[in-house]
Length: 278
Image (cartoon, rainbow, N blue to C red; front, side, top):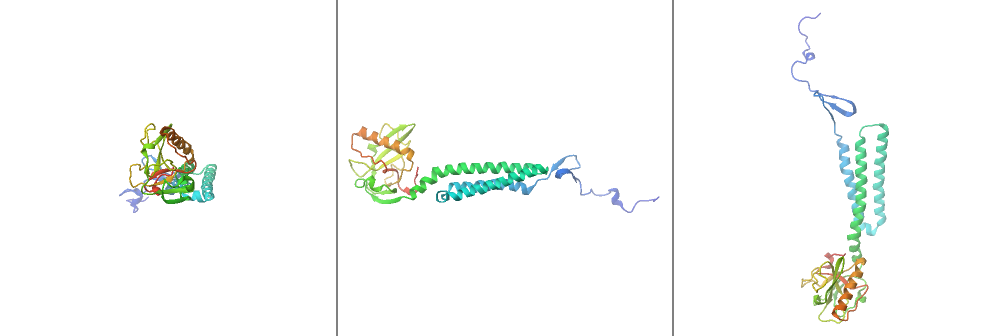
């Protein structure tokens, strides 16, 4: 029997509180002395779940939207296949993790779903942007550009390959002979002329920028005196409606207007390179 106080006072927990106030439980749970358990955050997994879906969307959307899709579509398909292979690898890892009963299953399945959803959105939205904006722009860039075109002397069939046309400074829109054709939307046309002409081969066109029953064409830069240029209309699905508007103007005004079926419809503006290609 030992009388007195032991020399090792720390064994009786006298003095300051001990630094270890918790202990590790199962599945990475940390149990506090107050009876609550909390799960530690897996920072690498969190960063991967935030960055990888965003990276997949950004790369695939860029490939589908930009000019590389127009020039090398096979590279776009390759990029989509690589992104799909990454997602399949994540699916395989999630399945293996589920079979092994390991921790972190929720991270795998969240990463799988978010990456798959971002890939699908990138393909759909990227192709929509490509067809709506990039294809008309690239088509116009691949065509010729003509300067100092006199609409009173030049004919539409002489400029069949024109993408951009710069007319002579004397050219203007003949608003008095403008017309609109309504079919759900209103398809507006106005001839481009120099003085009085008997025939009109070049027409400025616009969508929903006139009333359709009076000569009030107000599309593009119609009131800009320095606007003498236009972009070729690249929307083949709209071309037939603009032709009907021209025919309607011919019947109403009783003038001899020769309609060029393949050339002569442009978006009126000052700088065609910055205008709309639709």
